[in-house]
Length: 151
Image (spheres, rainbow, N blue to C red):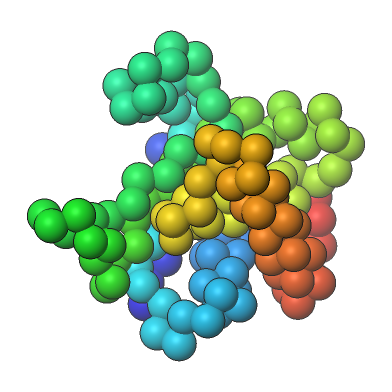
């Protein structure tokens, strides 16, 4: 299993090792004995806006996007789960808005993206409720388990 973190922006600082630990812990908590590969790209608002426009038809920045890896037959490819793209600019703004550390916000976005890669959807009220409940449980366990110093 490999969690590859690529920083494509230079506006907000966050440790790649922190993101790797969040994703790895979430996968283990979700029962992955041999967790699949996941890539995480850290970008700015301009970069994620282009992706959001191209793939979702929404011409504005967003906080996180997820791109599940699928085989040609539409079945999820087990060795590689997919890609998560996080706007660190948006994460910084949201952490200020909700008055919690940026590391908590980035962890939340990483878990949210990961749940999308695992097939959770938040397009309906029922789906969003189930996804947000799972996200909260995972995030609480991850932050408790890692006991990282929030900045």
